[in-house]
Amino acid sequence: MNSLIDPVELIDGSVLLHLGDGCDLELPYLWLRDNCPCDDCRVPQTQEKRFILASVAADIAPTEVAIKDQSLSLVWPDDHPTAYDLNSLRALIQTDRKPQQPWPKNFSPQTYSWDLFLHSSAVAIDALEEFMRHGVIVITDAPQEPETLEQLAPMIGPIRELLFDRIHNVSVEGHVYNIAHTSLGLPPHNDFASYSFPPSVQALHMLHNEVAGGESIVVDGWAVAEQLRNDHPDYFQTLCDFAVPFREFDDNNETYAVEPMIRCDSEGNIINLRFSNQLMQTINPQQPGIREFYRAYHELCLRVTDPQYKSTFRLEGGQIILVAAHRVLHAREAFTPTGKRHLQDAYFELDNIANKLVWLKRQRDQQHEH
Ligand SMILES: [Fe+2]
Ligand SMILES: [Zn+2]
Image 1 (cartoon, rainbow, N blue to C red):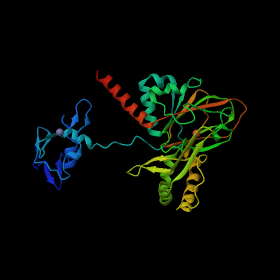
Image 2 (image 1 turned 90 degrees about the horizontal axis):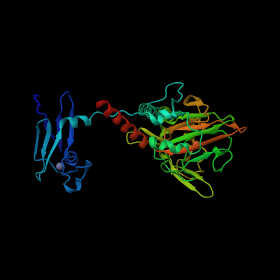
Image 3 (image 1 turned 30 degrees about the horizontal axis):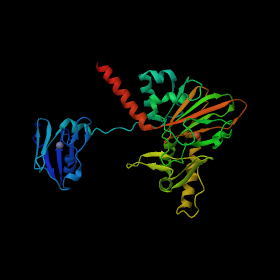
Image 4 (image 1 turned 135 degrees about the vertical axis):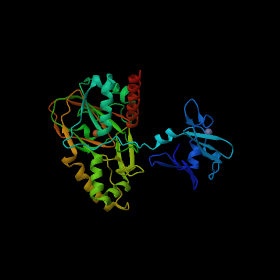
Protein backbone atom coordinates (compact mmCIF):
# COMPACT_ATOMS: atom_id res chain seq x y z
CA MET A 1 0.00 0.00 0.00
CA ASN A 2 1.63 3.23 -1.14
CA SER A 3 -1.24 5.58 -0.43
CA LEU A 4 -0.67 8.72 1.61
CA ILE A 5 -3.41 7.97 4.14
CA ASP A 6 -2.76 5.25 6.65
CA PRO A 7 -4.49 2.15 5.22
CA VAL A 8 -5.57 0.96 8.69
CA GLU A 9 -7.25 2.87 11.49
CA LEU A 10 -8.64 1.60 14.77
CA ILE A 11 -12.14 2.84 15.61
CA ASP A 12 -14.44 1.79 18.41
CA GLY A 13 -13.90 -1.99 18.48
CA SER A 14 -13.18 -2.28 14.76
CA VAL A 15 -10.39 -2.02 12.25
CA LEU A 16 -11.21 0.45 9.49
CA LEU A 17 -9.43 -0.65 6.37
CA HIS A 18 -8.98 1.68 3.37
CA LEU A 19 -8.73 -0.62 0.37
CA GLY A 20 -8.33 2.16 -2.20
CA ASP A 21 -10.81 3.52 -4.77
CA GLY A 22 -12.89 4.90 -1.90
CA CYS A 23 -13.59 1.40 -0.66
CA ASP A 24 -13.54 1.30 3.14
CA LEU A 25 -14.23 -1.80 5.15
CA GLU A 26 -15.11 -1.80 8.83
CA LEU A 27 -14.09 -5.08 10.44
CA PRO A 28 -15.20 -5.61 14.08
CA TYR A 29 -12.55 -7.21 16.32
CA LEU A 30 -14.81 -10.20 17.02
CA TRP A 31 -15.32 -10.70 13.27
CA LEU A 32 -11.57 -10.55 12.74
CA ARG A 33 -10.89 -13.07 15.48
CA ASP A 34 -13.77 -15.38 14.44
CA ASN A 35 -12.76 -15.66 10.78
CA CYS A 36 -9.03 -16.29 11.29
CA PRO A 37 -8.01 -18.46 8.31
CA CYS A 38 -5.05 -20.18 9.99
CA ASP A 39 -4.70 -23.93 10.30
CA ASP A 40 -5.18 -23.83 14.06
CA CYS A 41 -8.49 -22.03 13.73
CA ARG A 42 -9.75 -24.18 10.83
CA VAL A 43 -9.96 -27.86 10.03
CA PRO A 44 -7.30 -27.79 7.30
CA GLN A 45 -8.82 -30.61 5.21
CA THR A 46 -12.32 -29.07 5.03
CA GLN A 47 -11.78 -25.35 5.70
CA GLU A 48 -14.50 -25.55 8.35
CA LYS A 49 -14.17 -23.23 11.31
CA ARG A 50 -12.86 -24.90 14.45
CA PHE A 51 -12.21 -21.78 16.55
CA ILE A 52 -15.32 -20.81 18.53
CA LEU A 53 -15.97 -17.32 19.89
CA ALA A 54 -16.73 -18.62 23.38
CA SER A 55 -12.96 -19.11 23.85
CA VAL A 56 -12.28 -15.34 23.88
CA ALA A 57 -13.70 -12.32 25.73
CA ALA A 58 -16.43 -10.24 24.06
CA ASP A 59 -14.20 -7.15 24.32
CA ILE A 60 -11.15 -8.79 22.77
CA ALA A 61 -8.88 -6.33 20.92
CA PRO A 62 -5.73 -6.98 18.88
CA THR A 63 -2.39 -5.93 20.38
CA GLU A 64 -0.90 -5.27 16.92
CA VAL A 65 -2.50 -4.32 13.59
CA ALA A 66 -0.51 -3.71 10.41
CA ILE A 67 -0.52 -4.13 6.64
CA LYS A 68 2.32 -6.45 5.54
CA ASP A 69 2.83 -7.96 2.08
CA GLN A 70 -0.73 -7.34 0.83
CA SER A 71 -2.24 -8.76 3.96
CA LEU A 72 -3.84 -7.42 7.10
CA SER A 73 -1.89 -8.85 9.98
CA LEU A 74 -3.03 -8.90 13.60
CA VAL A 75 -1.76 -10.29 16.86
CA TRP A 76 -4.21 -11.17 19.65
CA PRO A 77 -3.59 -10.86 23.45
CA ASP A 78 -2.64 -14.58 23.67
CA ASP A 79 -0.05 -13.97 20.88
CA HIS A 80 -2.18 -15.82 18.31
CA PRO A 81 -1.39 -14.32 14.88
CA THR A 82 -4.04 -13.77 12.20
CA ALA A 83 -3.42 -12.70 8.59
CA TYR A 84 -6.03 -11.82 5.97
CA ASP A 85 -5.09 -11.56 2.33
CA LEU A 86 -6.36 -8.14 1.16
CA ASN A 87 -7.77 -9.59 -2.05
CA SER A 88 -9.82 -12.09 -0.09
CA LEU A 89 -11.26 -9.18 1.94
CA ARG A 90 -12.05 -7.26 -1.26
CA ALA A 91 -13.81 -10.32 -2.64
CA LEU A 92 -16.19 -10.32 0.32
CA ILE A 93 -17.79 -7.03 -0.65
CA GLN A 94 -18.74 -8.02 -4.20
CA THR A 95 -22.47 -8.32 -3.67
CA ASP A 96 -24.27 -11.27 -5.17
CA ARG A 97 -27.19 -10.37 -7.37
CA LYS A 98 -30.35 -12.39 -6.85
CA PRO A 99 -30.85 -14.86 -9.69
CA GLN A 100 -34.65 -14.37 -9.72
CA GLN A 101 -36.15 -12.03 -12.29
CA PRO A 102 -39.75 -11.02 -12.99
CA TRP A 103 -41.50 -12.57 -15.99
CA PRO A 104 -41.52 -10.49 -19.16
CA LYS A 105 -44.90 -9.63 -20.69
CA ASN A 106 -46.65 -12.60 -22.35
CA PHE A 107 -44.17 -14.97 -20.75
CA SER A 108 -44.37 -18.63 -21.52
CA PRO A 109 -41.94 -21.19 -20.09
CA GLN A 110 -38.80 -22.10 -22.05
CA THR A 111 -38.65 -25.70 -23.26
CA TYR A 112 -35.68 -28.11 -23.16
CA SER A 113 -35.56 -31.64 -24.52
CA TRP A 114 -35.32 -34.50 -22.03
CA ASP A 115 -32.22 -36.09 -23.57
CA LEU A 116 -30.23 -32.86 -23.79
CA PHE A 117 -31.31 -31.73 -20.34
CA LEU A 118 -30.01 -34.95 -18.82
CA HIS A 119 -26.95 -35.51 -21.00
CA SER A 120 -25.58 -32.15 -22.15
CA SER A 121 -24.17 -30.08 -19.33
CA ALA A 122 -24.32 -26.94 -21.53
CA VAL A 123 -28.07 -27.41 -22.00
CA ALA A 124 -28.53 -28.29 -18.33
CA ILE A 125 -26.72 -25.08 -17.31
CA ASP A 126 -28.95 -23.01 -19.63
CA ALA A 127 -32.08 -24.74 -18.38
CA LEU A 128 -31.23 -24.48 -14.69
CA GLU A 129 -30.20 -20.83 -15.04
CA GLU A 130 -33.55 -20.14 -16.70
CA PHE A 131 -35.25 -22.10 -13.93
CA MET A 132 -33.57 -20.03 -11.21
CA ARG A 133 -34.44 -16.82 -13.12
CA HIS A 134 -38.12 -17.37 -13.88
CA GLY A 135 -39.02 -20.28 -11.60
CA VAL A 136 -40.42 -22.52 -14.35
CA ILE A 137 -39.27 -24.53 -17.38
CA VAL A 138 -40.86 -27.27 -19.47
CA ILE A 139 -39.01 -30.45 -20.42
CA THR A 140 -40.24 -32.07 -23.64
CA ASP A 141 -39.88 -35.53 -25.23
CA ALA A 142 -39.68 -37.33 -21.91
CA PRO A 143 -40.57 -41.04 -21.74
CA GLN A 144 -44.30 -41.62 -21.25
CA GLU A 145 -43.64 -44.32 -18.67
CA PRO A 146 -44.65 -44.26 -15.01
CA GLU A 147 -41.87 -43.31 -12.56
CA THR A 148 -39.92 -41.42 -15.26
CA LEU A 149 -39.45 -38.60 -12.74
CA GLU A 150 -37.03 -40.85 -10.83
CA GLN A 151 -34.61 -40.31 -13.72
CA LEU A 152 -34.47 -36.56 -13.03
CA ALA A 153 -32.87 -37.18 -9.64
CA PRO A 154 -29.24 -37.30 -10.85
CA MET A 155 -29.69 -33.78 -12.29
CA ILE A 156 -32.02 -32.04 -9.84
CA GLY A 157 -32.38 -34.52 -6.99
CA PRO A 158 -32.60 -36.17 -4.66
CA ILE A 159 -36.38 -36.54 -4.60
CA ARG A 160 -37.98 -34.90 -1.56
CA GLU A 161 -40.30 -37.57 -0.24
CA LEU A 162 -43.58 -36.58 1.39
CA LEU A 163 -46.43 -38.57 2.84
CA PHE A 164 -48.95 -40.31 0.54
CA ASP A 165 -46.45 -41.40 -2.15
CA ARG A 166 -42.92 -40.99 -3.42
CA ILE A 167 -44.23 -40.40 -6.95
CA HIS A 168 -47.78 -39.04 -6.77
CA ASN A 169 -50.39 -40.05 -9.34
CA VAL A 170 -52.96 -37.56 -10.57
CA SER A 171 -55.80 -39.04 -12.59
CA VAL A 172 -59.54 -39.47 -12.18
CA GLU A 173 -59.09 -43.25 -11.94
CA GLY A 174 -56.85 -43.67 -8.89
CA HIS A 175 -56.90 -42.86 -5.19
CA VAL A 176 -58.95 -39.68 -4.58
CA TYR A 177 -57.72 -37.54 -1.67
CA ASN A 178 -57.45 -34.20 -3.44
CA ILE A 179 -59.47 -32.06 -5.88
CA ALA A 180 -56.71 -32.77 -8.44
CA HIS A 181 -58.08 -36.31 -8.71
CA THR A 182 -61.33 -35.01 -10.20
CA SER A 183 -61.96 -33.32 -13.55
CA LEU A 184 -62.74 -29.98 -11.86
CA GLY A 185 -60.72 -26.87 -12.58
CA LEU A 186 -57.96 -26.21 -10.04
CA PRO A 187 -57.22 -22.65 -8.98
CA PRO A 188 -53.56 -21.63 -8.75
CA HIS A 189 -51.87 -23.25 -5.76
CA ASN A 190 -48.69 -24.80 -4.56
CA ASP A 191 -48.71 -28.36 -3.24
CA PHE A 192 -48.37 -29.43 0.37
CA ALA A 193 -49.19 -26.11 2.01
CA SER A 194 -49.90 -28.57 4.83
CA TYR A 195 -46.16 -28.94 5.53
CA SER A 196 -44.38 -26.29 7.59
CA PHE A 197 -41.63 -26.38 4.93
CA PRO A 198 -43.42 -27.35 1.71
CA PRO A 199 -41.34 -28.83 -1.11
CA SER A 200 -39.60 -25.98 -2.93
CA VAL A 201 -39.57 -27.65 -6.37
CA GLN A 202 -42.28 -29.69 -8.07
CA ALA A 203 -42.11 -31.67 -11.29
CA LEU A 204 -45.44 -32.39 -13.03
CA HIS A 205 -45.03 -35.11 -15.64
CA MET A 206 -47.85 -35.62 -18.12
CA LEU A 207 -47.84 -39.25 -19.24
CA HIS A 208 -51.00 -39.09 -21.33
CA ASN A 209 -53.31 -36.23 -22.15
CA GLU A 210 -56.18 -37.30 -24.38
CA VAL A 211 -58.95 -35.17 -22.88
CA ALA A 212 -60.66 -32.01 -24.03
CA GLY A 213 -59.68 -29.03 -21.89
CA GLY A 214 -57.47 -29.20 -18.82
CA GLU A 215 -55.00 -26.54 -20.01
CA SER A 216 -52.09 -26.01 -17.62
CA ILE A 217 -51.53 -22.65 -15.98
CA VAL A 218 -48.55 -21.24 -14.08
CA VAL A 219 -48.63 -18.01 -12.06
CA ASP A 220 -45.71 -15.94 -10.79
CA GLY A 221 -46.81 -15.83 -7.16
CA TRP A 222 -43.99 -13.51 -6.14
CA ALA A 223 -45.02 -10.95 -8.78
CA VAL A 224 -48.56 -11.11 -7.38
CA ALA A 225 -47.32 -10.63 -3.81
CA GLU A 226 -44.88 -7.86 -4.76
CA GLN A 227 -47.61 -5.90 -6.55
CA LEU A 228 -49.88 -6.39 -3.53
CA ARG A 229 -47.13 -5.01 -1.26
CA ASN A 230 -46.89 -2.01 -3.56
CA ASP A 231 -50.63 -1.33 -3.74
CA HIS A 232 -51.72 -2.37 -0.23
CA PRO A 233 -48.78 -2.55 2.19
CA ASP A 234 -51.21 -3.17 5.08
CA TYR A 235 -52.74 -6.24 3.37
CA PHE A 236 -49.26 -7.52 2.60
CA GLN A 237 -48.18 -7.18 6.24
CA THR A 238 -51.34 -8.93 7.43
CA LEU A 239 -50.61 -11.89 5.14
CA CYS A 240 -47.04 -12.04 6.53
CA ASP A 241 -48.29 -12.07 10.13
CA PHE A 242 -51.55 -14.01 10.22
CA ALA A 243 -51.14 -17.79 10.53
CA VAL A 244 -53.53 -19.99 8.55
CA PRO A 245 -54.18 -23.73 8.99
CA PHE A 246 -53.71 -26.10 6.01
CA ARG A 247 -54.46 -29.81 5.97
CA GLU A 248 -54.18 -32.69 3.51
CA PHE A 249 -55.19 -36.17 4.61
CA ASP A 250 -56.62 -39.53 3.68
CA ASP A 251 -57.33 -42.73 5.64
CA ASN A 252 -53.62 -43.40 6.18
CA ASN A 253 -51.98 -39.98 6.15
CA GLU A 254 -52.34 -36.73 8.03
CA THR A 255 -50.46 -33.53 7.19
CA TYR A 256 -51.17 -30.23 8.92
CA ALA A 257 -49.38 -26.89 9.24
CA VAL A 258 -50.31 -23.45 10.52
CA GLU A 259 -48.32 -20.78 8.70
CA PRO A 260 -48.76 -17.30 7.19
CA MET A 261 -49.33 -17.11 3.43
CA ILE A 262 -46.37 -14.84 2.73
CA ARG A 263 -42.88 -15.20 4.14
CA CYS A 264 -39.99 -12.76 3.66
CA ASP A 265 -36.30 -13.07 4.43
CA SER A 266 -34.47 -10.75 6.84
CA GLU A 267 -34.07 -8.15 4.06
CA GLY A 268 -37.79 -8.16 3.23
CA ASN A 269 -37.47 -10.20 0.01
CA ILE A 270 -40.44 -12.51 -0.56
CA ILE A 271 -39.29 -16.12 -0.20
CA ASN A 272 -42.54 -18.04 -0.08
CA LEU A 273 -46.13 -17.56 -1.18
CA ARG A 274 -48.23 -20.35 0.32
CA PHE A 275 -51.55 -20.54 -1.49
CA SER A 276 -53.96 -23.45 -1.54
CA ASN A 277 -57.67 -22.77 -1.56
CA GLN A 278 -58.31 -26.51 -1.38
CA LEU A 279 -56.10 -27.28 1.63
CA MET A 280 -56.90 -24.17 3.67
CA GLN A 281 -58.92 -25.03 6.80
CA THR A 282 -61.60 -23.09 8.65
CA ILE A 283 -59.91 -20.51 10.85
CA ASN A 284 -60.99 -20.06 14.46
CA PRO A 285 -63.30 -17.02 14.10
CA GLN A 286 -61.97 -15.62 17.37
CA GLN A 287 -58.35 -15.54 16.10
CA PRO A 288 -57.29 -11.89 16.56
CA GLY A 289 -57.09 -10.03 13.25
CA ILE A 290 -59.43 -12.34 11.32
CA ARG A 291 -61.42 -9.46 9.80
CA GLU A 292 -58.25 -7.81 8.47
CA PHE A 293 -56.96 -11.18 7.29
CA TYR A 294 -60.08 -11.93 5.28
CA ARG A 295 -60.01 -8.50 3.62
CA ALA A 296 -56.35 -9.01 2.63
CA TYR A 297 -56.95 -12.62 1.57
CA HIS A 298 -59.85 -11.57 -0.67
CA GLU A 299 -57.55 -9.15 -2.46
CA LEU A 300 -54.84 -11.83 -2.78
CA CYS A 301 -57.41 -14.28 -4.27
CA LEU A 302 -58.48 -11.68 -6.85
CA ARG A 303 -54.88 -11.18 -7.90
CA VAL A 304 -53.78 -14.82 -7.89
CA THR A 305 -56.58 -15.58 -10.37
CA ASP A 306 -55.99 -12.41 -12.46
CA PRO A 307 -54.99 -13.32 -16.07
CA GLN A 308 -52.17 -10.74 -16.09
CA TYR A 309 -49.97 -12.96 -13.88
CA LYS A 310 -50.58 -16.28 -15.57
CA SER A 311 -49.22 -18.25 -18.49
CA THR A 312 -51.55 -20.88 -20.02
CA PHE A 313 -50.54 -23.77 -22.26
CA ARG A 314 -51.47 -27.36 -22.97
CA LEU A 315 -49.18 -29.95 -21.41
CA GLU A 316 -48.95 -32.90 -23.79
CA GLY A 317 -47.99 -36.48 -23.00
CA GLY A 318 -44.21 -36.65 -22.52
CA GLN A 319 -43.90 -33.11 -21.16
CA ILE A 320 -42.83 -32.10 -17.68
CA ILE A 321 -43.38 -28.76 -15.96
CA LEU A 322 -40.72 -27.95 -13.39
CA VAL A 323 -41.70 -25.17 -10.96
CA ALA A 324 -39.91 -23.40 -8.13
CA ALA A 325 -42.87 -24.10 -5.93
CA HIS A 326 -42.38 -21.46 -3.24
CA ARG A 327 -42.69 -18.89 -6.04
CA VAL A 328 -44.68 -20.30 -8.96
CA LEU A 329 -48.24 -21.55 -8.47
CA HIS A 330 -49.75 -24.11 -10.83
CA ALA A 331 -53.35 -24.57 -11.91
CA ARG A 332 -55.38 -26.40 -14.49
CA GLU A 333 -58.63 -25.74 -16.27
CA ALA A 334 -61.54 -28.17 -15.95
CA PHE A 335 -61.59 -31.00 -18.48
CA THR A 336 -64.03 -33.49 -19.92
CA PRO A 337 -62.76 -36.99 -19.12
CA THR A 338 -63.38 -38.32 -22.63
CA GLY A 339 -59.97 -40.04 -22.76
CA LYS A 340 -56.94 -40.77 -20.64
CA ARG A 341 -55.28 -38.05 -18.56
CA HIS A 342 -52.49 -39.23 -16.30
CA LEU A 343 -50.02 -36.96 -14.53
CA GLN A 344 -47.33 -37.85 -12.02
CA ASP A 345 -45.78 -35.46 -9.51
CA ALA A 346 -42.49 -35.61 -7.66
CA TYR A 347 -40.89 -33.04 -5.42
CA PHE A 348 -37.34 -31.74 -5.13
CA GLU A 349 -35.53 -28.92 -3.30
CA LEU A 350 -34.37 -25.63 -4.81
CA ASP A 351 -31.15 -25.59 -2.73
CA ASN A 352 -30.04 -28.79 -4.43
CA ILE A 353 -30.72 -27.32 -7.88
CA ALA A 354 -28.95 -24.05 -7.08
CA ASN A 355 -25.94 -26.00 -5.83
CA LYS A 356 -25.98 -28.38 -8.80
CA LEU A 357 -25.85 -25.34 -11.07
CA VAL A 358 -22.81 -23.97 -9.24
CA TRP A 359 -21.10 -27.36 -9.54
CA LEU A 360 -21.95 -27.73 -13.28
CA LYS A 361 -20.51 -24.27 -14.01
CA ARG A 362 -17.40 -25.04 -12.00
CA GLN A 363 -16.92 -28.25 -14.05
CA ARG A 364 -17.40 -26.29 -17.29
CA ASP A 365 -14.91 -23.60 -16.26
CA GLN A 366 -12.31 -26.19 -15.24
CA GLN A 367 -12.66 -27.89 -18.63
CA HIS A 368 -12.11 -24.56 -20.38
CA GLU A 369 -8.93 -24.01 -18.39
CA HIS A 370 -7.37 -27.34 -19.45
FE1 LIG B 1 -51.02 -29.37 -7.41
ZN1 LIG C 1 -5.97 -18.53 13.81
